[in-house]
Amino acid sequence: MPSILSFVALSNGQPTRASLEVLTRCRQLAAQHGHDLAAVVLAPDPSAAADAAQQYGAATVYTVADSSFENALNTPMLGALDAVIEQAQPAVVAFPSTEGVKDILGALAVRTGGAVIADVAEFEIKDGGVEALRPVMAAKFLARTRAEGNPVLISVRSGSYVAEEAPVAGTVEAMAFTSSEAKQTLREVVASVTGGVDLSDARVVVAAGRGVKDDEGKRLVEELAEVTGAAIGASRAVVETGMFPATAQIGQTGKVVSPEVYFAVGVSGAIQHVAGMSNSRIIVAVNNNADAPIFDVATYGIVGDLYQVLPALIAEIKNANGTT
Amino acid sequence: MNFCVCIKQVPDVSAPIQVRDGELVMDAGRVVLNAYDASAVEEALVLTEQHGGEVEVLLIGPERATETIRKALAMGAARGTHLVVPEGTELDSAAVSKLLADHLGGSTYDVIATGKQAQDTDSGLAGAMLAERLGRPYATNAVGLAIDGDTLIVTRQGDAGQEIIALPKPCLVTCSNDMNDPRIPKLKGVMAAKKKPIETVAVSDVPSTSVRVLRYESVPARDPGETIDGEPSEQAAEVVRRLHEASVL
Image 1 (cartoon, rainbow over the protein chains, first blue to last red):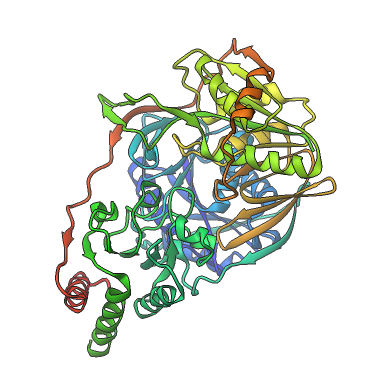
Image 2 (cartoon, rainbow over the protein chains, first blue to last red; image 1 turned 30 degrees about the horizontal axis):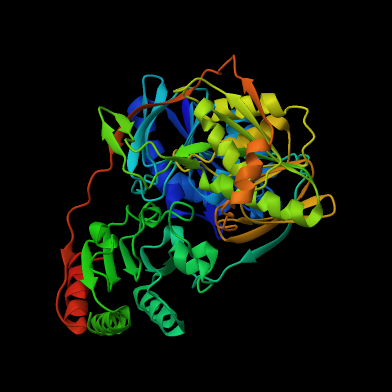
């Protein structure tokens, strides 16, 4: 029976929300087409994530355990995934679209002889191929794209599907890892401090834009994030000032986020930024320029000075949290 | 170190674009050097200015794309190569990387650099595909490059932070536009570029593609939003009330 293989990316040893979204979509497609569903976990210790994958319906979980997967270096990831694909012989391999996945996806397609579509918002199996909808032209348009290959590799933007549990008693197939000729070496990882909540997985995001001009503005953004349990994001313009780290950048060249609530604080809403956040369920925009394009995508628009509006929002949320 | 930077001519995505009968229509027809590739050219020029070596550029495209090679030459690249395909040729990332690999196989450039993605398709696949075909170690999404002896030091933006990776030459790197602000060519550079050599190679055998766009569609509009008026305290109270109603706080 043909199978679908779903790649599970981890954060602190557990599957990321985006990985479970992709796994859920693969389970739907497997049921619809009578395919087997398998997952693959690469980690120093994959056991917890392998259990979690079974909670979301993976009947077979391929695991490869090695300390080199601690950091997403492309050489070991490529070698391990190629071996798992060789073993599992899937028709489709689906990935969450993380930076680690973007790093290897093209090379893996060449190595496996498969076809690939990157960064899709929707995908289905149709007439022996995969059809997907993906944003192009700075997310101004969608391209309905078809790939035929064996396998077809696909990476999926976070927030494209809703993760739903469907536990199965599956099997875990631990595969040996033969360390390959890694020519590149990792010298250092400079982790950034973003307040502890992983941006791509966050239910609430507070994003700062150019309107956030000084330490006081930054403090207000941080306080709003704290009272809402949000991760902090930023537009490219404000990352360039050095006030926020590059890991916080949201948009075409940064991260794609799809939280329940997105607070756009002093963000003008350039198309490159909107490309990274337009999947958010509710967008609250605060900007003193009534003509800012962010108001075209905002669910609730507040035209006003963020230095006055944010303190009021923070007080109101603290108040509501205290009384509910 | 010697660099070959692979560049692409792309439509200006900030110009008006419509979709008609499943096709993109760009009446203005404005085309530009892909911004990510421009950053790769800039970084290669800076590194060769500091450490010696030469920058060449390589482009696949129809005849009119020569102007984009001239742009890179005006920035300071020494020479260009144009792999000419017929106007309207559809190439997927695999086909692009195959044509580039066929041309670059056996070449001795220390570093092959390119943008991390093209502004029009945003696929971000061709760089890693090319590295795999050439058997070169590589890193993607670079936000900083440095040279340390025979090693290229790449700072790449990863998921959890910045990863600093050492690549022995020969290697390949794909560049983010967050790396630098590409120089605007000066008149002297534009004049000099007219005399710089461009080798043209007609592509006789266009690879078949396994990925194709069936049609383009407009992005479904979001539900129209609502402006919340009043004093800041009133605006805040109203928004928080709505967020509680939606059970998201």
